[in-house]
Length: 186
Image (cartoon, rainbow, N blue to C red; front, side, top):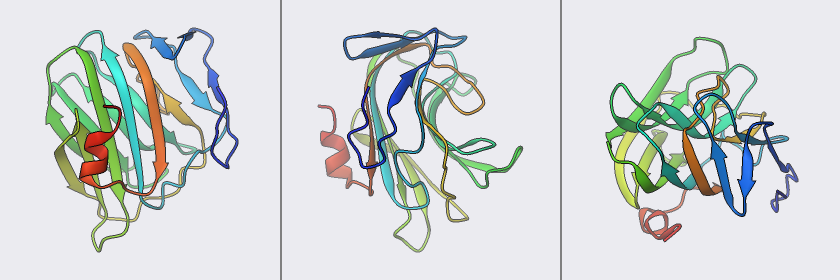
């Protein structure tokens, strides 16, 4: 799939992933797609979104922006907490601290997820949206670092494969307003 943004980092399917028209199917062990490089700067404001079909409530990452040691930001399901989360790594180092904004969700089927990172305020924040509604926000105590690796669908830097289908995904420079996020993928 071709990156239409100025970065020119095309999306490459992992060996066990498959593409069925606009749907990327992954399984719980492996199967993902990643760009050949970054598609946005994560040290500024940005918005991510995905339309997905969740097969079960297993843990798994839907979207991530990779650094060299870990994902700067990932949108994922935490099965232990039965929650969707947006998690921000405080540095690009193994075992670095993280902050998360999570919201309970124990449904399967179609869902629209979005996450935003707002670097334009005095206190940087990461927010999680589910089906257009803001459901959680967390203050990020340090400025987010720029992830210079791949932008990935269906996995994090550490693996954490998503078990379901990602029908569409967006990575947008700038933080969209809550109203703009509510209108995404509707």
